[in-house]
Length: 220
Image (tube, rainbow, N blue to C red; front, side):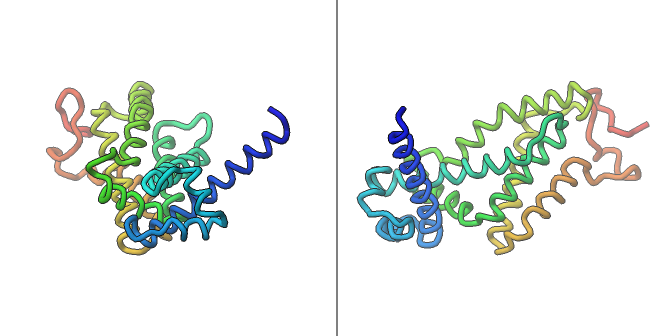
């Protein structure tokens, strides 16, 4: 590819990124139905026709913006990852990376809510698709953790679901209460409880996690 074509491709990619970021902000602030594409174009510094050339129509623009937000969230998670990490660090880094993104961009949470409300009958929510994409990878790491002895024998799929419920419960509660700045600390604390549990040595043996033999963990 010639230098001129590379420069053109770079400009187009940057224009697309600017439009998507503007769309996230405007859709979050105004709602899908109330949003005027012209407002998005003005915020991005492009013509309305440019927006339509890149995305086709308002619905496709919204869904592209939702995907863009999740791609940014995935990049945030990637920045937390490092080589040689164990299973608990792997899970914690996913949670913290996710929390850092949504703490900095609470408007992206609003897109999740709107997508579910507006497109529930026509599309699978973007965040559910991302959830499904990550499931296999996370469950594979949970199995490795069991094999290495880092985790006790657990039901892998149920653990994945609880991990996701806990993480996104923190994210949505932080958004609803209007305290996104505390989200990272909230998620870190939740992960500590998730990993360590709350039952002490003097706790009810019948309430302790069971081993595969059915005996309470830590029991005599």
